[in-house]
Image (cartoon, rainbow, N blue to C red; front, side):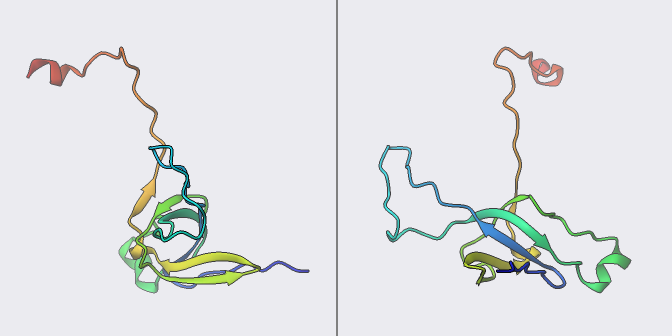
Length: 117
């Protein structure tokens, strides 16, 4: 059977939800189907071309496929494509992009400006 690709229009993005972490910091495992909020982060699968005035204003789409994004529970509309649950929302509904930051070395010297204060 052929698979489908959902191509978003204008300023919309398609996001695949990430499985919620069922293990809490306390060690408690929350079973599937419990009354917990829906996942609020996912991976961008596709982005629209933006809206027509963006190009003249020099605005570019701030996310691209592969970005790990955070969104509110109320964002967009959930659709099912080939038995896969996807979120389609406007890029302006996204709260941000999660980026991996390398932890500084514990014995790294302080910044000179901080030492003077």
